[in-house]
Image (cartoon, rainbow, N blue to C red; front, top):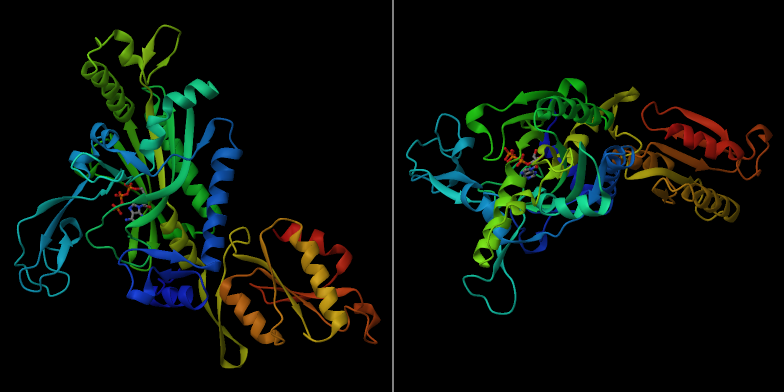
Length: 457
Ligand code: ATP
């Protein structure tokens, strides 16, 4: 598949109401984006597809929605306070600031100068104050990953759901990172969403389960419409691993700016449960309660009864915003048509399309047509597929073009034949259904419309 142009995708997103720069009327906030009427539908559809496949269709994964505001102690014990940092450098010539590992051959990306300051470590977590009095101890963090909410609720889920290993806890939610150089539209931003699973396994079975999840996740992205040739795996070299990881495989996608990480599948070992168990025993000591031997069993499991151990964890962690960008990139297509015409069409999978079906009355003032079109919209809406648009611009060609651009799989036109006001009796009680990808038009009887749609989705 040919590489796509990011500018064209950004332009489509703005023009058609997918994604806007946040606070644009005040000049915009760098690295922060808002999802518009169509973007929120696409994003919600992607989340729903992830939840369905990773929670509903499995018996060994439980859902969770933990808070964004996070106690500083959690990030002390998780290691983020000390290690969740990137190295940054400043260019002495043009004064631009860069993340060291993003520079090619140590050159400033803006002016090419190699006259850079020594690297300084920069912690990427956002701090905020809790309560009315801001003092040096009253701060908390906006979480930089959703994972810690899962580890700190591990015992709650164990106690309430009584799962047996292996099992997972899944969560979708916002994460915040004070990226030094946000870039490439919604690829690298300061506020984003993650779709994460922490899958707890017996030590010794971790490598097998990591392979399993890499395979699962790769197949899932393909099922969202990403072309297999635009996906590849990358095993992170030892020196690049995060502080908690024993091994990480990344799923890379060919974004307009090149192959980059879409999802990471990390083997976090027992690092996090171990650190928070340590946190629990430290608390006891500081509360002047003797640390008893059970305290180390706090976040552990027993198997067989009486034998405590800390499970290992495999973490498939996907970026939702990067997922949206990948889906849009793959789907964006410019097609040459007969007569030197062109069309832009978003060949997005029907389950992800922001609008599922557009109902188009041929005439917006003809009451029989309008009433029939509205009745059809209502009956299709009741299927619960998502948004069904009623499109009464009065210009069929324009409506088709608009819905091609936003990826609506089916358009249905209600005309004089539909309402029996024509001599063409064979077409009475039928609508014209136009398929987005083939542009083929078929007359479908109203009585079989619902079945037709169910089959298409
Ligand atoms: P990168 O190396 O690109 O900075 P990372 O390895 O730090 O990413 P993880 O900590 O593994 O990322 O986070 C899991 C997922 O969260 C990533 O695969 C990515 O999809 C998403 N993600 C991470 N940082 C950002 C960001 N700044 N903007 C958008 N998505 C992000």
